[in-house]
Image (cartoon, rainbow, N blue to C red; front, side, top):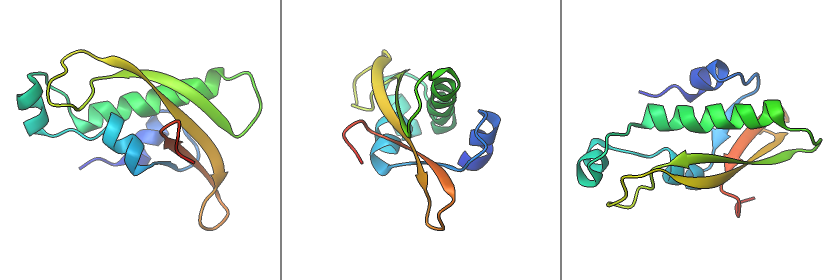
Amino acid sequence: MIDPGSMAKEAGFKWPVVLTAGAWGDCVAWTDDDSQQQKIHQDQPGRLWDVLYMASFAVRTNKSSGDRILFELHRVPKDGRSMDAELTTLKLIVGPGDSSEAVITILLPHED
């Protein structure tokens, strides 16, 4: 079982971090069947760590002020055939959660 909250803290985040279904499906979701079909071993905890680490790095190195950052990472597409990682872009937005608390949302660039 993946504990995203614990992993986000380990990556350096002080606020809660959530991923949209689109970002999760594109950059994190992975099963043993995917590893067998694509003949490359991946796992969800490792893929989630990559997303969180690169998001944290983007926050730490960002020079501009604002509530959103685009960042890049390499990930193997979940397409049934790819074996090599490809560069992809994600977006990070800081905004209010359900109770007006600060929350970091990681999403695909075209999502809001």
